[in-house]
Length: 126
Image (cartoon, rainbow, N blue to C red; front, side, top):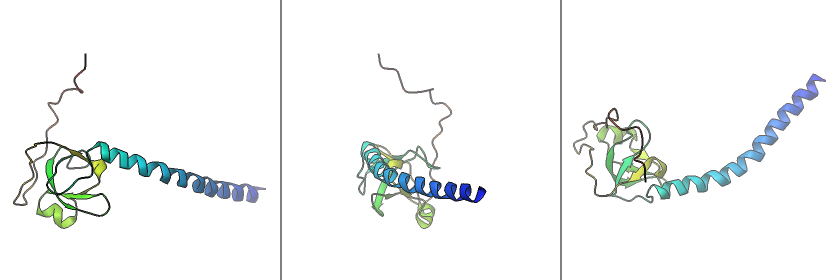
């Protein structure tokens, strides 16, 4: 009796995984692409962007190269370039217009943005 229960549990879990993975792939791809477009993608060399996720969040820099798929590489210095820590997908970047970048051209550390004095949220619209 326990053998059948175990077999049915394993089979139903595998069946549920197979049924769930196909709709997930079909839905997540277009959703991530739409998020990237809303952030300003496609990005090209020379575009000013702000990193909105990860350890470099808040850094404004420039795209210096395309990468695999829609991903791009941004100027975060020589150390990040060597370790590929400068590769970001369009969902991790936000296009900014006429921004002064704060990436160091000589490969030094990128200054971080201090959010400690930021207000609690966006201004209200009346």
